Image 1 (cartoon, helix red, strand yellow):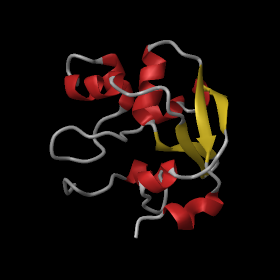
Image 2 (cartoon, rainbow, N blue to C red):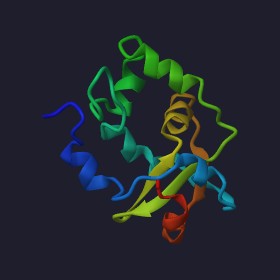
Image 3 (cartoon, rainbow, N blue to C red):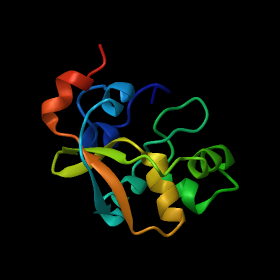
Image 4 (cartoon, rainbow, N blue to C red):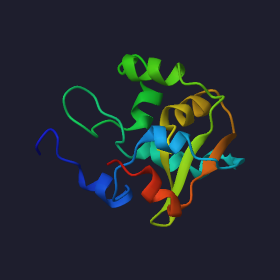
Length: 130
């Protein structure tokens, strides 16, 4: 596989558009609580990357092996939980637009509910990368 080729699992569960996180942050969307278990499926998908390859590291691997993935673990533990996780319904599941490291940190800390903003698919034209 080409080091910049997107793995099939990411294509299967991911969005079919690219978005600008800054545009997502600017949206005026209410914050609500969600059971963290509704989002924990993210931990089994290689949404992170190590080295020169993309999408080759599962969040669960970082959570379970902090010494081996010290850089990602440190990034996770530095995540600011005062910001909600931005999610959007995609293919029957809530998928994170922004906040995977916050979700990982909350899990490590034993938090059971997390604040989220449910971004409607109607916002896609506003958040798409140009």
